[in-house]
Image (tube, rainbow, N blue to C red; front, side, top):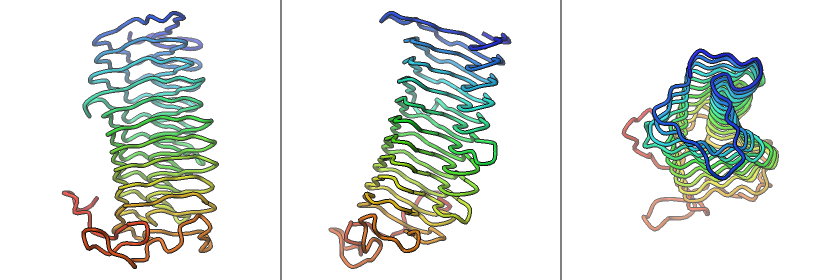
Length: 325
């Protein structure tokens, strides 16, 4: 499926299904296809298509979804799948999901969403009222390219609830919020045993930016080596968002580890902060109304005898194999 052109949607393929049975493709290549509207590589609508070992590369859309566009669709991608070098002139350079889509992407760290770009957000993945599931994937070197764009690696909005397990979200970039991850408008993404590293943003939230009533959960993650401009949150920026960090390392940020602004329900426990140049925890106007008084004050000892705060957070060197984070 190479070198095709669509005046509207689905440059490489347009897959429409209404039944409970899907179709399968193995060892497929979808490459170099442009679409005048959405879905440069593949456009799915009401689809249960299954892909095994697929490459979706070098496709472009004038609208959303440079590589993949899902509309109320649940395709599955297994094995070594590469979604790279795709471009969207709007949102979702690699993948765009909307209308209750729930695609699944599972691999063994060999699958990746890499070097994709989108003008207005979600260089790698854009979720609009959708719940994709990623396991053992690498989302890296993606960009949101325009001024005031957000979510270089991932953009979640409108009650999206994506799940990421054992994924690397690495070296993505944006201008406004969330170099690696951006969440807003009642979204509730979950991240378990993920590494969020080396992402950057010009404004706020180098690794993660959470705004507008989101409910994000980070468990057993590493958020390291991310950077932001002078508005806060080299690691994480939270504004009017419910955020939970449990057993997570937040280290080596250029800027504060976590920056809270008008965040009233944050939970930060059993975490390790280290080497964040703007301080480990920062508050807008010293506002601690987020329910975290005395966070970072080492007034207690944990079961290992390490100094900790009342939430069992410590300030110890995580001793990464790569000391740069």
